[in-house]
Length: 201
Image 1 (cartoon, rainbow, N blue to C red):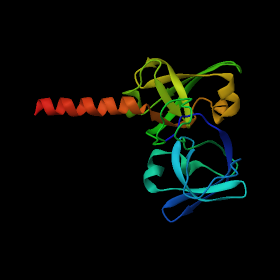
Image 2 (image 1 turned 180 degrees about the vertical axis):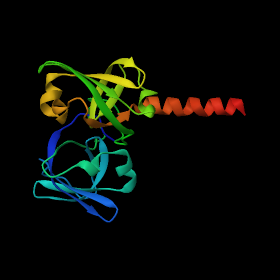
Image 3 (image 1 turned 45 degrees about the horizontal axis):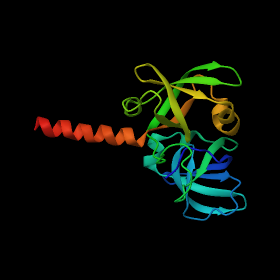
């Protein structure tokens, strides 16, 4: 479980395929990271299989690869990182599972260096639960839905701190990003769908 408050930007040191898995070695400023811990990498919850020396190694299995862009990562690429939430920690963003729902495409970038507004064309499972001023996770960052300009499009606003402390500051039109819908919205949708099906039967 995470909150979408990125606590470091790491860098891919190596990316390789091992059988059907993608293995990533990532540099990070975590001195006490242990094997078996969960870390959000660009919004996807991955298990640390080896840690030490200012870096850690994770693996993305086939199921994860289908929903993410990990197959495109290469050495030198920056990634947003967040360690798992501890009981009693402040919930600075919103409840983030680290279960990427799919890939969105940046369709518009507006604004200046100090404030930026992005339009994202998102998968149906994300657009169906997106509400104005609700929450959405983009590349592991907890953000507020700024507007819903058209069907299938979610608009987000990036403040200067987010631009400076995450990878989102480098996004441009045509770029692809991981997105996770608000977990509360997903549960409400699932419950309502079940109720509708029950009534029909």
